[in-house]
Length: 365
Image (cartoon, rainbow, N blue to C red):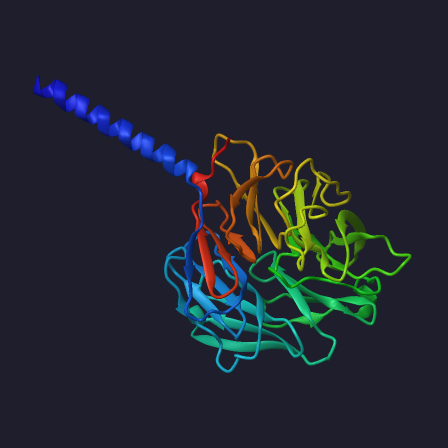
């Protein structure tokens, strides 16, 4: 009899645990915290293992976490309060990072020893300079871009892990349309695919005879040569492509819209199945302007790759390579980053807002 009662109790406990697990799986939400700095965060990068994350933003603020975003330490560079760090790259060891300040003077700082030591490694004092985003293929090879100067998109490259940066000569920089530029909204309008390819999403005002669609610049040789394609997102002074992400070397998503009319859900997404050569509108769209899209692998039983698109009015997710979208949250963020396995996703926004999402809980239906 005692054995039977014990078995029944164990069965009930198992059923309760399973029910709680199913409830938690449905209860997908951001766990939001507010950092005391109240900075506007635009840069975030999670290391491949997911344990360490770096965040950057206004007032020269840089934060670092060693516990998947639960707690944060202020590791801001000294005497950098006037700079707005719109992008940051964390190296796999978690102890080193590169932070990019966008406007004139544009600067790139490199951190070592978990942010205890900082070095100014690049500065551009031209009045027109405005850097938009950067990314790294390897620990040594990286690329950054900025708004056009004299009709050419500014391209920087590093071959030593961000210790030094050099601008490509004007004859190797891609030509721009009048009024065209990037959006330094999340550090993700520049996207690396595979070992050689880089894509840059653009927007900006259009002249009367220019195509109304936003352009994407593509290089398949790490920035030595460039081609341009168009995507069905409207280009304008506040409109264009704000973020690009790829699930593999062929399948990708570009998001954006109009940032000063964030409720508009048209002209805010395009998908590609040929590595960015051509783009088309999917059947459904995220719920408004989105400044960042990121991809991460789904559970092992799912052959699909998932996307999350975030913006000022909320976030949405897709489990069918961007064809359809479901609402995730009405909480606004600017940028987000996931580790390689997708076990850690961290989003950042205005007024010191940081959100952490547990990706394995993502529902598949």
